[in-house]
Image (cartoon, rainbow, N blue to C red):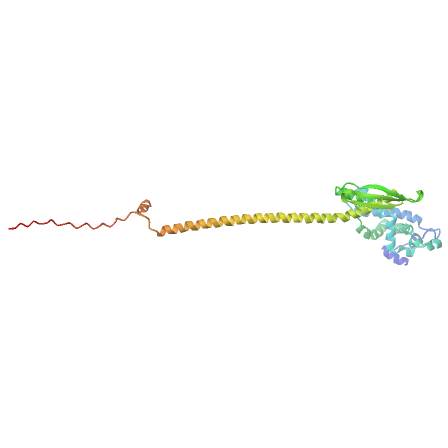
Length: 316
């Protein structure tokens, strides 16, 4: 890759091309190399990244900002950025370094990238260097989780368990292998409440604990979603039972209301029927008198015939 192509990727055009060439020169190549520019670029990078984090993560405190910055300016991160730039294609290395694969070495690529930042600072000032760093770090910042970046596996496992009120893990060395100067440790990490028991190995007790903690965290994270789903299903089932009971109770209430309405309707019909019968049937005299009606006089019975008196006839 040419220097012109590299400047296009950096998003900055050098007024003094010699500065860029010096930044790409390893000490194995000659007397004029990039170590002083690397020293300068390291400070420029720290300041620029600190400014970016201050803008992006407004709620992080000083300790968290420092932790995230330290992980963004470390060798591995710089190496990954240098690989995206294909910086290895522009390196100027000595013959021995070239043959030993120095153009692939993370330390050389990370140092060279810092030297490039220092060269941009000298050529165009801090604003120009900050813009170049911002452009290269945007993809990195998009994927940064400030709550976990830079934390080791033991810390992450402890925080994960504490946030769920689960007792902390227990670590125990179960075996050591090899000679004293080259030992391999095996450490067990157990989380009794989750029935997790895993083994991790490493060249030191600390590294073995970290390996075991990483495996335990992966298992715990895999278990918890299943537990959450089971809890949701149980809650849903309980809700379904409660709903069924409520519906049954509501049905019983509706049945009672229906029967009561039917009884009222029947009673009303009976009253109406009685009223209709009362209008049709004549009331007895006494009832009419009680109701205030005048009683009609009963028709007079014919008088019995009066017998005429017998006459006595005297004989002459």
